[in-house]
Length: 248
Image (cartoon, rainbow, N blue to C red):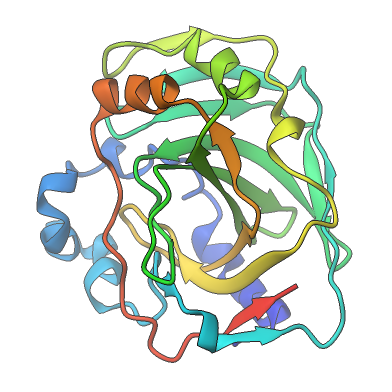
């Protein structure tokens, strides 16, 4: 696996591509034609020709324990949510500055969170019914995504805060004042770490992925409510191409 520091060279390329809604502002794409993403526009070529694309299947036998523990330190505030957007591909919550977490002494600001059903990454070929992608950016443009898996179970209060403000139609935006985003993560919990890409066009590589090993719970109704509005919106797993997966 590439050293995390080496990924900083991608900062200049990926800074500004952070919004999940970047692609639809330029070229139309859909989940019905995933195999054609790389042919839609030159800036989407990584979707077809990239070697470190996301998501992938995380196989137990390919996981390598970290040489030293790299703890996650979350500092999320419940009053930094700005609005909730239905961009036609997902439900996305945008955040003002103030919420962040630290990995290996690097601070990453939380910029937005969006959702997929089912999960995009798989664990030993298993999908979870839903995943939240918490998208972050460091001061030098490094992108990092925390992928929080959800299993079906009890109603999730943080998800419900968002769903209560969920826009029903593509292109609609609703203001939201409070999201208890800290309830979706646990500092110092075990996780997988690997290199990858954005899972939507332009599929830019050089993204750090953090996947907590312990899933959260969301109710069947909450998962169905999202799917009924957005539909299934997961990119199929891509070739690992010798990707190394670190377990911290």
